[in-house]
Length: 148
Image 1 (cartoon, rainbow, N blue to C red):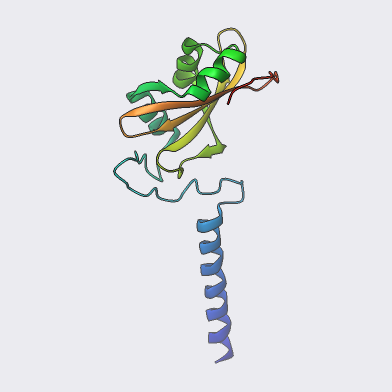
Image 2 (image 1 turned 45 degrees about the vertical axis):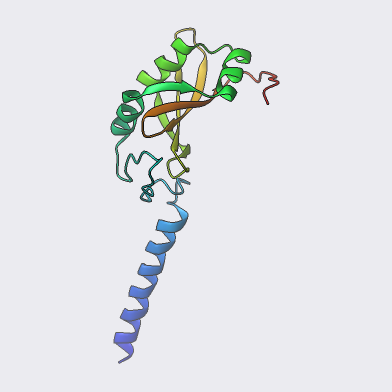
């Protein structure tokens, strides 16, 4: 009987660890990266098991829409629309800075070097019919912006 209780306790421990990893993220700090997205009429679900290539293809498939905040940050950080598109094509997703479960559209931080050697992070929102540019960040220089 004692042997059965020990096995049951081990199984319960494994189940609790799996649930904790699911709800609180994995050990690399990628919270929520593997949780399924809620389907809503206004959201675009890329899918919990999508590869980086699938995510980037989905972001590239729709027309870009720049938020007022993104336009302001682009101006003060000297990042052009051409550079935003360049990063969208050849950048890499930073999963630690991405929030795929954001509502109403999951957001993805894409990083890379522009043709003029600016190291940037561009945050894109994957919406149903458009890809929104949320903000742009120069990773090497701290510019003073007066964006509201």
